[in-house]
Image (tube, rainbow over all chains, first blue to last red; front, side):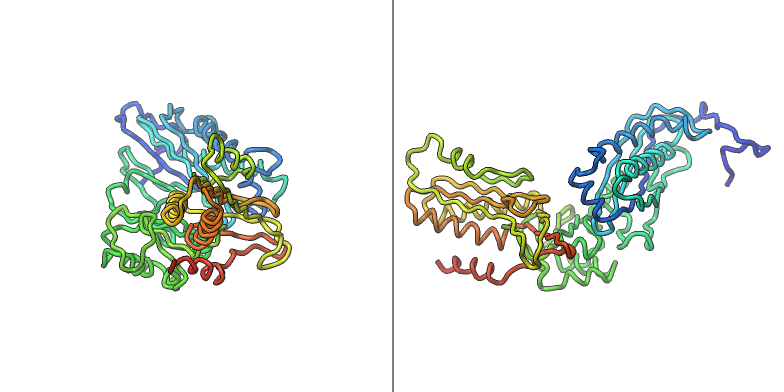
Length: 267
Length: 150
């Protein structure tokens, strides 16, 4: 393994990509900014003095991806075919999760563009919110996945220390890549208080991992992943399959949506 | 008509819309639920309402259809707000029209009882001493059970 940006004399140089063949490239990067719960609440209500924070940060991230070559010395200027920046507000951990997806039909990877988009989106979130919170912390900026190109596909393996719950290769909600579409999954949602207690809102469970094709089987698969899912056995916790109330014996098929939630308190 | 929305609503305007051009309606009963500034703890400063998009609408539709099968109704409006609310804000509106008052009163009561125990909404209260998810009440469950034998 060698560093491609260094020549045989150890000097920095730009890689000549003219001879590489064009392929469909995609990279997804993620990061987060942790803030005070009150700041997050203001952000979600649109109550911050600088206005619409997420829309501004999204544009900043997209612009940054397009200008990566001006910031990172040995990056090529690329005509990206797609840049998407998404935000998820996570109350349980009081942070905004940022993901960026970049795509290109070309000769070079787009991971630097995705990482730059996430970095600048996080910096913009900091700038937009700093009037009310100076303790915000940006972290975990990293590549989630990369497809296309000679070096082959890359996917970050689930990081147990970072993620509150291991969600295997089928994690959804935060990132989505075409790689996983081939695996039939049951889509699990945890709502309201249960979501906050578990620190999980959406996750996909491979259908093949269920010993029994019903809700009881799904609970067993979830409990095998993390003890915290023992809470699903609490008699108060309700369950809906494809948005219709169900129970342990409710039969499941691949692509079903299963929601777990506490008793309702509307009205 | 069922709506789940962030925006406030105006019960007067909703009633006007429900009655416009109708001369067969003899009674309208409406219930508006408001955010109180005291509940499980005093000094409630705000309320966040979460729902389960898709299922919430279908649960409300099922409740209204059940009411229509029990009473002769001429129009029903259910509006439920979600998102961040402040004390005094309206949360929910149930408006029922019928030829006669008894059906309108009962159906409105029924829809609220079922909405509180069957529609997927969850409240979180923000108070000066912290925030917490509101617990379900046994009395709401008992109220809903009143309709089960009839």
